[in-house]
Length: 514
Image 1: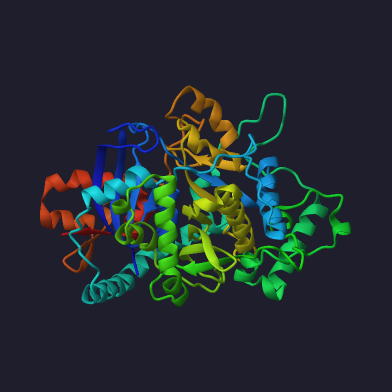
Image 2 (image 1 turned 120 degrees about the vertical axis):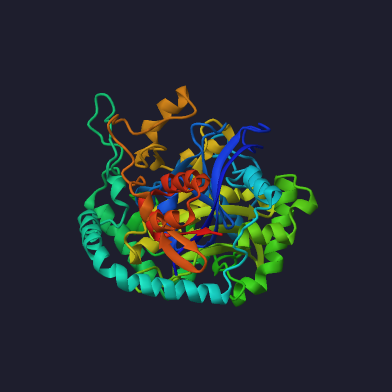
């Protein structure tokens, strides 16, 4: 089914949780009644982000703390010294129950304030965003489907040319990535020919070993999707001799075998966000209690601000339609909770979206009693390893999106520690290696990262009349709808929406008009 959205326009002058400005935050937003994973992938590649079903995009050159979309490249990721300390600390705790409470100075900061939370949830709750389309009732879904079928038949001829072209572009790229992301200008460091946008060179032997290890993990009977994620105990795949002369990989550090008599058992479970899923339902109350404990201790939220309604709206209701294509990952695409079970109780939950090209981190909440385990860092490293594992079956799924990077906010800079990573240029929507962006960000909060002055946003809205509108149970192009309505006041809002979502999404998603 097509995505159905209701555009809410510009929201300016509300509280920012990053710099504590009372009215510095500026963003545009829409309510997503339902959304395909491909549409959401394309939107986050244009700087959008979801909080529950509210999908928003900061107005980068106006907001007090510009929020740049950041993605890590897991296939080339090497854990830093401080990342290794966190993983070793967890292994020591699991094996011997050892607790090291001293935080190393060079350890990345805990994400004390995750992205969407402070300002945006408050905004959603306070505005209590009123939707004209209350629910996608069954008869409405039916009319939507029949409209799509009708359109499908008549549009097939017209679209076949476009389709062939777009398939050619995808075939050329071969990576399954959006076509415009190849235009990154890479500037070598002075005196060096190194291209920072490319993965660091690795020996062929090393790459072969890596592939073999990941393959073994897939074949390992306990290494099915959940097994690989969940077995904190025995997943040591090579005898120590075979790898003694090589730095340990991320997987080696996470899945090092534990003694028979280990003090603790850690299991990570991937649960679809759906009240129809038995595992999600049976763990809901425990998960909710953990959320309340976390919000009150870490964010100092009063109890009335972290009730079941807020929890469900923010972390359990997703517009993403679950999809299980044959060439996709075994778990399918959609929204999930990754639950960390220690000795039979949940101590942390990572909320993630699995999309065609990436795993996108939404939020993390954990038991403050286990803060000594640096669960913010630990879960991010597990999610990077998880992305690498999904990539084995679904080759185009090769990025880990960490939400927004906010250079002007010291407590949000920790995201830049997961290298190699890229930031999204807010004007041309190409990815630029973070090393090339940092010098500019030191000089100015807002930056265009693409160094080519001629470059433009290739995915921009060029033909707004082709935008799809959902009105009175019918789907029609905006050009036709506009003539019927003749309401000039509506046009500015529709054009703003088209410019922000880009031509592809404007033609694919349905913009609801009452």
